[in-house]
Length: 328
Image (tube, rainbow, N blue to C red; front, side, top):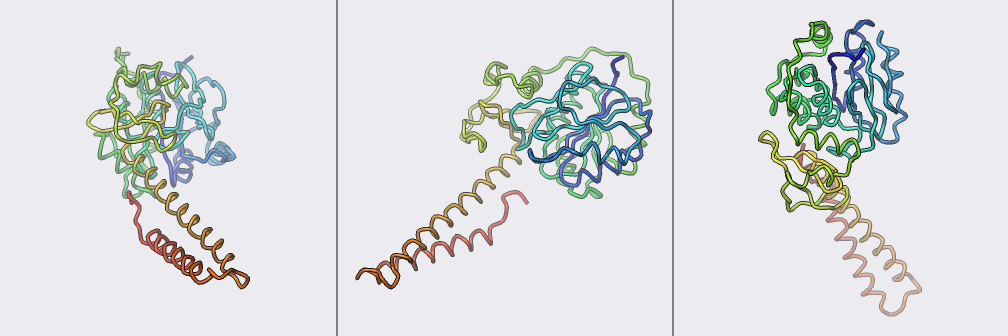
């Protein structure tokens, strides 16, 4: 029997402790499935289900292949795979990164809204930047319930703050209040099924997360070419207006919010500056070797050149030391 509702959770920095606190308070007979994305590195060992399983009465599962949805089970995205909802099941996909991550929160939230509509419950917990905001807005748009952790108690408040800034959520709650709230919401008899229409943009983006070629989804028709290049693949980014917010997606499928794009650009600046330092210092070392005791008569001029390279390198190091991140 297919569950008639789903709870989807997105978190990042500080999320392991937050999830452990949550699952410890949920009963074994919790009447709905829960699915969560936490940002992890591709090389992560993928043992979060074991960590949460030890803290919980729920069954915890990392999704690697199509997996049926069952009440009382806590499903987790595998490292380097998006987690998407399909009718009656969850699936792991290798769709393009979104907001610099795979797994990303937005594909899970969008697909939950697409399949469950008003029966989807979306939860944003502690984390940096704003992954999950677009997906939470989609859940709200399709009649689902939206919940955000109170930023005042979040270990990393940026993600909850962004969610509250851009989505008029149904509940702002502490972690201590979250489990009783989910128990109450999940136990409510489902309302009479009301037909809901999924916006075409949502269908397109879910299909991209499911590995369909972005051009085949028709995404180019809804995006406007921007002057910015994708930090991941360097293709042109298409700009999309979505509920008053600007988002970006390239022809390859990589997706960015404005904040995640700035963060990736900032990281690129950092890498470029360090590469410049390395190039200057390698040149300095080479010239110093030439200007050694056995150098030719041009030693003095070469030595001056080495000193100039050192001055330039030190100047770049000072810039790197003093510069602030583009997004705090």
